[in-house]
Every structure is written in structure tokens, then in C-alpha cells.
Amino acid sequence: MPDRTIAAISTGMTSSGIGIVRMSGEESFQIIDRIYKGKEKLAEAPSHTIHYGFIRDGEEVIDEVLVMLMRGPRSFTGEDTVEINCHGGTFVVNRLLETVIKHGAKPAEPGEFTKRAFLNGRMDLSQAEAVIDVINSRNEYALKSSVGQLKGSVKKKITDIRNKIIYHTAFIETALDDPEHISVDGYGATLKLTVDEISAVLKDLIDSADDGRIMKEGIQTVIVGKPNAGKSSLLNVLAGKERAIVTDIAGTTRDTLEESIQLQGLCLNIIDTAGIRDTEDIIEKIGVDKAKQYARDADLIIYVVDSSRELDEDDKKIMDLIYDKKSIILLNKSDLDIIVTKEILQNEIKKCCNSDGNSEITIPMIEISAKEEQGIKLLENTLKSMFLHGEIDLNDEIYITNIRQKTALQEAYNSLQKVNESITENMPEDFYSIDLMDAYESLGSITGEAIGEDLVNEIFSKFCMGK
Ligand code: GDP
Image (tube, rainbow, N blue to C red; front, side):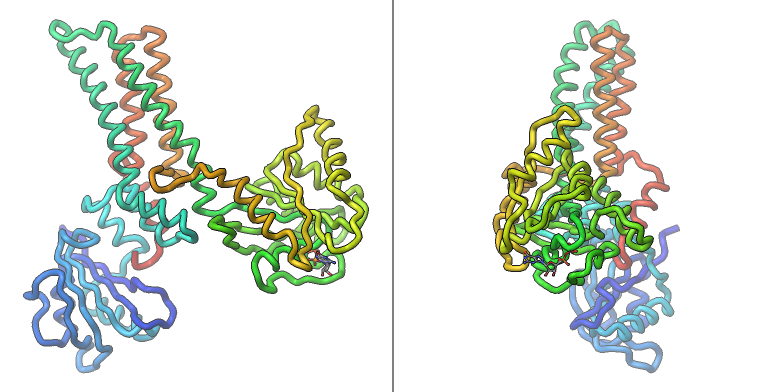
């Protein structure tokens, strides 16, 4: 039995010029004819045409609309699809959806349109996942890599690798079935060449996954420093607006604030935390523990030091927290008399490192004045060189950024290493094919060729409504 026709609002739930209600399924054309009033019957109209008219619920006219018709399989879902463009008020769009449902459609689950596109073979799973990534893209890099994946870049690369694996597996199986005619003598050496070549490609993809994630999702950044060092002021300068509460009383920033900031193509997800210091104040303590937790999980720690005051024990605790992480130190308040210089800080940090027997300090230090907005450009350039290195060129590279896909790549890589071990240990050939097939299946889960229904449901449930 075919799936029922589904419907949802495909545009955002705010007032806007146009709103779209989309239907997909066998009954789409019948349902639209029950409620559409225009020059002609839409069920008889050609595919990929647009029609002007009115939507009516019985005698009541709901809205003036443009209706787009796309017959399967030449539609996003592969099914008959109707898109109704109406006026974009939230009430009218909802009323339209209600009408469509009243006349036979069922409300779509989140991601159900894309799920149908996948199940109907319109796209593989990596492309379906790219749809949500395009929607969630927050910067140029994220958008480019998602669109690349949507166009099939990941699918192509993975399919090429799988084809190589299946070729060798088929050869081994055939040879084992027909030992009189096909010899596998010395085959291990040939196979090892392919396994090494594929492993190198997988390794590159796995290694680039973290860089890709940073470009796509942004750098999880924590600003640490004692109360009054100027953390909130810095956040305000970077964000270009009054966001955090800036005051002179130590410990004002009690909880954490989050702000996404675009800096020269990089996205910084900044978490401004309560100043790290020992405190008896319970509310403040919650913030301090959180700050330490965030600092441990962050991609980048920005440590703000008030350079107009002597360092104390609290600063040393912060240094202990950051010296072995990807961090940057800002000597703030450079407009005042400077007491803490870079040299002093270098020496203090060296002491932290020395206790670990490590004396190499590579943490960049920059003098800034959040108040006078001095040194901010240098900070931006430094961050860019810390995270981009000019290595990332999305025009010809594929970046796997999705954790699920990365895990599958790692599993495939591990299985291939087992194949190599079997070759080295001169194991019987059927050992090779077992691990080759494991690698083949792990890679298949990226494109969705070897994947259970539960996982499909879980993946698509993360989508937004109407997609
Ligand atoms: P936080 O507690 O670390 O978030 O510090 P705030 O951003 O609230 O700043 C504490 C005080 O230091 C405020 O009075 C700010 O105006 C002041 N301040 C912050 N940055 C600078 C700076 O670069 N120079 C000077 N002179 N004062 C600053």
C-alpha cells in the first residue's frame, strides 16, 4: 500500500511575504482539486507548471495562491508533489495546512519529505543529511561543504571506494569457489596495495573531520579570566553590541552567555563564563564550575588578563587550566599603566609547564584594550592563522563533518587494518573477505545502503518540520 499523502508548512513560522504549504504523495493532485478554484482542474494539468487561483474550504475562501505541480518521479520526494504559495502570515498558512489535512492529507513528521526522497532513491543518505546541513549552515564554509555533499561529492567518493572493495571480495570468493581455474597465490600482495591506498584516503577523511567540524559548526570558545579582567567588554567588542552586562563589581557575569560571532569567515561560538576564582558564593560557584567544565571541552580558550593589576593565585589556577590547550592570552587594559607584561606572563606559564616537565610555550599573547577597541584586528588575524592555516580549500576537498559518518569511516578503516594483518600473517584468503565485507558495510552506512529502519528514523527525526 502506498504511503499516505503528507503535508506541512515548508516556510518559517514568522510573518513573511510568502508562505508555502507542501504536499507529497499519490493523492496530492486529487486533494488540491478538492480545494483549488482556478481556471482548470489541476489533476489534468502538465507537470512543472504554476497555476493562479484561490484555496477554498467549502464556501469559505482561505487565500489567493499560486500552486506549483510536480509529478513524480521528477520531484524532490520522487512522489507527486504540490506546493501552494500563499500569503506568509502565520494564521493564513496554518489555516491552509488545516484545509489540506481536512481534505485528505496527513501531517508530515519532521524530515518526512527528505526521508521519502531517500527511500524513493532520489538521494543517498549522505545527501539527505546534507539537506539539513544546508538549512543549518551558519557560514560560507558550512554552506559550501554541505552543498558539495548535497551534490553527491561524499556519495561519489564512498561509492568509488566500495567498488574497489567489492571487486576484490568478489575475486577472492570466485577464486575460492573455483580453485582449479583461479589461483590466489600471491594475491595478498596485490590486495595489500589496494587496502593501503584506500586506508590512506579514509585516514585523510577522518583526520580532516575535526577541521571540517570547526569550520561548519564554529569554534567552541570559552573566555576565562578573573572577575573584572574585561571578559564581558571583550565579548561586546567582538559581538559589536551591548550583550553582556558590564559592571565594576567583581563577579557580575554569574552564569554563562553564548554568542555566535563571525570573524573573517570563522564562526566563534563564544561562551562567556563567570570569572574563574575560588568563591564561597553558591550561585557564582555554579557558574565557576561550569566555566571549568566548558574550558575542558572547548576548542579554544581565550584568557583575559587585566594587565593593570598584579597576577595572583587565581591567575595561576587559570594558567594551569589552559597551558596545554589551544588557547590565546589577551593582556587587556593596555590603555592603562601596564604591570603585567608578556615576559612576566611567559615566566608564570613556564612554571606551570615545568611542573609537567614541558617547557615549550606556544600560546599566542596579544595586548589589547577592550575599552578602546585596540588590538582586536591582531586578535582576529591570530585566530584565523591558528585555525585555518590556509589548508582548507573547499573547492576541491571533501570534508566529512558528520559524527555518524566519521564513526563509519573509522570502522571501515579498522576493518581494513585487520585485512592487512591477515595478509601479513598469511591467513587463509576467506579471512580477507570477511573484513573486507565489514569495511564495505560500514561505508555503506554512510550512503545509506546498509542501514536499518531504526537508524533511518532516528536520522530523519532530527530534521525540522516541513523538510
Ligand atoms: P568581566 O568581569 O571580566 O566581564 O569584566 P567587565 O568586562 O565587566 O569589565 C570590568 C571593568 O573593566 C569595567 O568597568 C570595564 O569598563 C573595564 N574595562 C574592561 N576593559 C577595559 C580596558 O581595556 N581598559 C580599561 N581602562 N577598562 C576596561
